[in-house]
Amino acid sequence: MTTYDDRASLTDLTAVVERVRESVEGVIEGKPEVVRLSLTVLLAEGHLLIEDVPGVGKTMLAKALARSIDCSVRRIQFTPDLLPSDITGVSIWDQQRRDFEFKPGAIFAQVVIGDEINRASPKTQSALLESMEERQVTIDGKTYELPSPFMVVATQNPVEMEGTYPLPEAQRDRFMARVSVGYPSAEAELQMLDVHGGVSPLEDLQPVAHAHEILKLIEAVRGVHVAEPVRRYAVDLVGATRTHPDLRLGASPRATLHLLRAAKASAALSGREYALPDDVQALAVAVLAHRLLPTAQAQLNRRTAEQVVDEILQRTPVPASPQQQSGFGAVGRTAPTYPSHPPRRL
Image 1 (cartoon, one colour):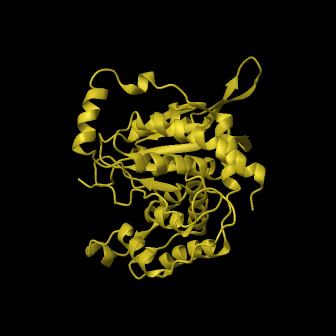
Image 2: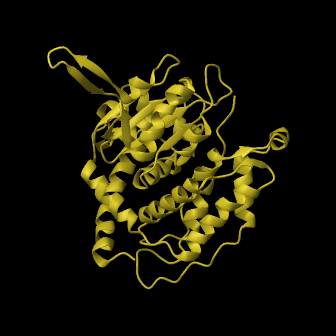
Image 3: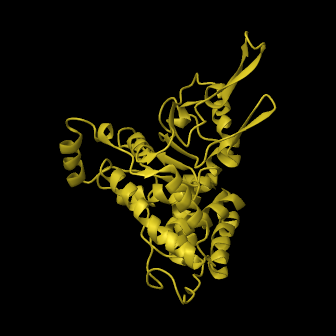
């Protein structure tokens, strides 16, 4: 259970998240639930996969989030000819020193933007596996630690589009959540024409939070309390994906851990020091669906992984919210919804 000092720090640092949210929403109009999910993944020490058709603001969302935080940012444009060493780095022979010198790649940044990640070959995509999971890179037998905080924000086009490679299962499993930006409403699109019609708002976007503030907030999120019934509820949801008849690949234990961490971050964003079953429910589709593989029969019946997760949510008993004697917010307060629709297909 968190202490009084932890709760106070959580209250103080909530203002930091609010500044970042307002900064990103100034660029991405009409998508507050997408922005909230991005912040949830950041505070949960995860990585975010943004999948949708071209032109809906995937890269702009990633850039806006990165520029709103005063930290190192690197962007990688994934192409078919990109090599793994372009991402991780390479050792070069130094004539003067007569020794190999390591030249860090683009992965050595606190926020790494991977644009159109599924346009690179699976061999290149695999260069991210170690860094995303262990936050380190091993080159020529030597291990290099990555900076902290560390987050990969990757965008990808639907796999039906030309020139794309589907992400391997191991790669998808390392992304905490997948989100689809979707088309804006008519009002938001009209506002976008006014805001983006001249100069891009990204050019004037200034950092509103420092990296050390994000680290403190991440530490506060780690202290969010999760009662045993809520933990068991998350385990039951993930376990149901492994036995569902419409799935040939269920979610991994890593998915359970990611779901729990995301629920804790969601609770912190709501000003609570404890997670509720509502937090788990709201994030289940975003955290689990992209890891699941439907059977051939389910695909013929046009059953999507998102539909299967929704069905599991309806069938799995929800534990009663534990009565809290202290904390932020009202007990049983409903967690905000997150985007649950599948990415739009062409």
